Amino acid sequence: MELNGLQLILIFIFSCIAGMGSVLDEFQTHRPLIACTITGLIMGDMTTGIIIGGTLEMIALGWMNIGAAMAPDAALASTVSTILVIGGHQDIAAGIAIAMPLAAAGQVLTIICRTITVFFQHKADDFAQKGSTRGIDICHLGALGLQALRISIPSTIVAASIGTGAVQAMLDAIPQVITGGLQVAGGFIVVVGYAMVINMMGAKYLMPFFFIGFCVAAFTNFNLVALGIIGLAMAIIYVQLNPKYAQVAAAPAAASSGADDDLDDELD
Amino acid sequence: MEKKLTSNDFFWTFIRSNFAQGSWNMERMQALGYCFGVIPILKRLYEGDDLKQALKRHLEFYNTQPFVTAPIIGITAALEEKKANGADIEDGVINGIKVGMMGPLAGVGDPIFWGTLRPITAALGASFAMSGSILGPIIFFVLFNAVRLWVRWYGIKYGYEKGTDIVQDVAGNRLQKLTEGASILGLFVIGALVNKWTSVNIPVVISTITNAKGEVVVTTVQSVLDQLLPGLVPLIMTFACMYFLKRKVSAITIIFALFAIGIICYGLGIMNVK
Image (cartoon, rainbow over all chains, first blue to last red; front, side):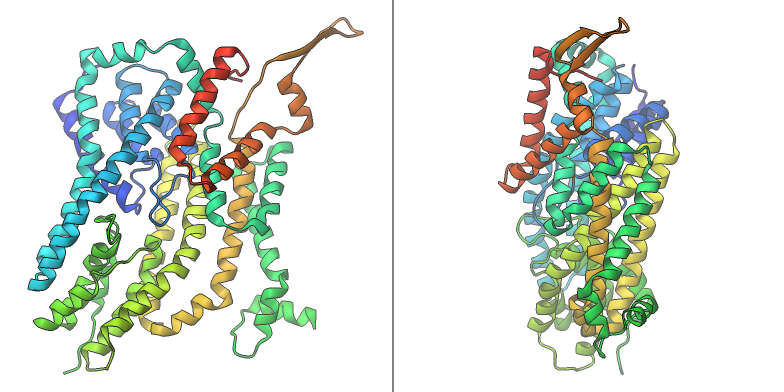
């Protein structure tokens, strides 16, 4: 399918927003749920976009920037894979498989951008020396613009060439054992994200709750809302019963909430 | 005349703080972004050489979980206001407080926002989205951003009102309770997702027997594993990933290794799509 001029402009604008979202990590416009949905909307098939978004979001669930460590890039993976699936008439599983190398490429590109930004940081030092707040604003927003182009240039190139048939011929040339294998791997690739979250929490002594969650899910059909309520209830009970907090609350200096007081009364 | 920050200054700092990581760089990380955020405050309080000095002061190395920057901005505002009105606060003190708080606050912010809030809201959104419902992206976007904007807005207010007292709050048990509670919720849900949202199928046939009723019963490796504990293979894979991530193997490398395993096992007929 060939995209018209307006669609290409919209793809460019939205992938700029996704690129900025990826470095800012604030409004989450780079997350598959948002980025695939809006890219799908521009491509004229929002429902497919939403489904790709949901599937890819699942895989990317634990991808996060912690400290100075960069995660695989969800923005490039989301926009380009959605363009390829809808524009190149691929099935969603193939799109997910293509998304992974794209996430790696996006990660490399963001590291390059974040290195170039060191130059903007030094330029800002000069502007501080002159007392120019306007100059500092320009440095900051210029660096943000760089991150926007990081996603929008590759996305727009792919969107513009999708109609030529070259991209589709390339996608169709992938042998069946690769697409099938990628589909199989798609079933368990999620565990990398889960492992990232568990490692980040750094709370080995709380791992029993992980195993309770695993077993509850293995033998029941509870949905996420029910699981969330059970998890929250266990968290509250744990904090209420933990002697570590009860002792601190008993100290005269510490302000304690009503719930703590009730608990103290019962303990007395 | 005493210098006082107006609610207008706080509003613009709040707006700007939403772009805190825009110039994240390999040298000083969020330094420029922090300075960009507090410019409305510095412009209100200083001019001339004092402003230059203040701008330089806030271009020093800085990095934390982006949302918990809010209370640090609030404290900085309170200190800068005192300093502008003649209080004897050295530059090093303000930076010392920023640097001293960014570590502990990231320790609170990372598990709460990246470890619990985002995975749970995103999982909820994805569960709707996979059936093609627009509710999925909307739920995720609204829930996550509502909490985030609330933290950003009240964080700045709270930091400004409490000033350096907040350092005790960070050390105190209220934040620790919140962090520990969020970690429990997060780990519980992740545990459930490891089981629910993964699929591994090993269709290798162990035995084919015809039972007393004359039905053919095929026993595969997967059916034996499922009788033992459904989701056992993804569970083992999760722990293997944790092990390699701890050994500084990058996530992307592990993802590609898993893809290679998928392709090889599919090619050999050991694994299949369920």
